Length: 317
Ligand code: F6P
Image (cartoon, rainbow, N blue to C red; front, side, top):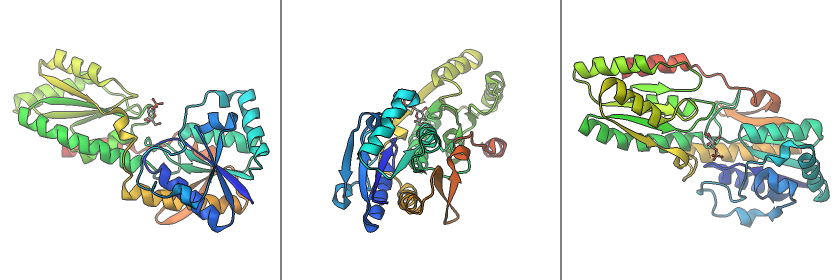
């Protein structure tokens, strides 16, 4: 293996992973090309050489130095043809894809339909990759959200108010569950579970009669809009509500120790397995053990033990 390419999505820790890929490849005498703007850059032949020095000083930076995009074009025959042409033209022997479900689904297509050696590195704040305990970016995202929530709690407690806090997670409520439990919140609404606002309002009313007037409700964006939930709570209970939508602040920022360490191990291991001839796999780390999983398995919906979180949140609230 003489030359590989690396392509990414964006979230905290991805730059640390790029650094690990480039420097591990360098150790083996393998050249690295960075793909600019994700799969769109692969289609448009936007590749830049990356050496040891080009990844200096990026370990602490959020986002991706390679820039990225949500490519619709890759999911067309024409887009895939051009992407493969770019790899052939640039004599790329293998590709490392660092990203979440969308990026790894495209990687699986490249490996299976087009015979390109591809290894995936899990990186998504949603942490929704099946079989992968933790993806790069998740730890930073939940810590950013928790920091915001702790600040909101100060006001919720001081003014005895009800806050509805919206966190990211279109199809997966993992961020919401973790943050609600860690933040000592009363309620959490996620896409994976049916929810009755009426039941919650009844609980709030009962609590209010007993003197409990401060509530924090965490909502995953894919379940409901925080403003709609807050409006309904006010209509039914007559109590004042406030809303905070955390949005993209959760995806950026300085990566935590956990994300940087994960990025170092996974980025480096991805190069090792690609060099050893593995393809159509995703690298993962659990209990300090590195291993690979088939990409096909990783892109299936992740099963979370939602009930254990719910039970504990309710007991501790
Ligand atoms: O998949 C990561 C994620 O941040 C989701 O939590 C969120 O729904 C989505 O991306 C937002 O995507 P975009 O930045 O393209 O609006």
